[in-house]
Length: 303
Image (cartoon, rainbow, N blue to C red):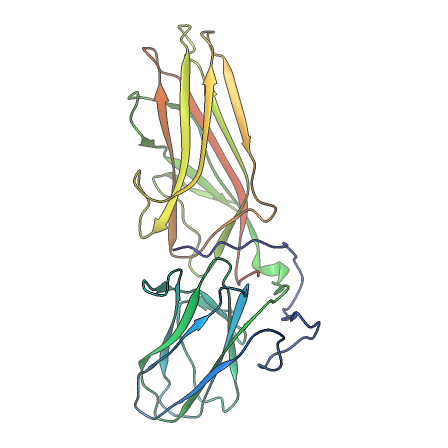
């Protein structure tokens, strides 16, 4: 389950959490309309804190404090129905690490982990490896306006391919794509695209093209799909985008689609994979397909 993030796309140095009451905070206190859930976890214990209802919130912050020499390891989880649970990617405010499993050392003060929960019903905090001291946990939903990311943390990314013969007909087929990340264009013929470790790929534009056969005039149509999921994406993976194009019976006729996206684009989190597929329809003389997906990778979460 991917965390889809819809919001502004600022780029500034540093970060801050701006709450719905207009205050900037690094600790949980007085957030209008939301109640904090807190629990002290005894030495050597591995309980679950929650679930916490976040259905009316757009973000959540976890505040974790421990003073033990042995650091606890803990997991953050999300659910859309309160029954099935999946990892929740959170960002540690202290070091910018983005992961669904984190650890904390002898701090004696709260460390904040924050995440977007747009479209999420419940979250929970689960200790997987116990601490040698009492650990305090506070879970605070809110209507966070934005978390700012560092300008240095972004790098442009383009996934593309052109002139792929759309054969066989009527069969959904993955398009092998190339990736340019900044000035690095060494990754080619990828069946899946995926962000760099610990980063998120924000898709800002998608362009798809269909060209009729260049030697014989043939009517052709094509359905393009972008699919994504953890581990590896294939032709049965959940659908992110679907667009259809067609060309008349004219040699080399070309049709292009610039896919409309939400204002903030789509976010593909670290650990998720996406693929681009085509399903072409023609009687003979196959067309060819082009794809270009534009965006950038960033480290951190934008809420």
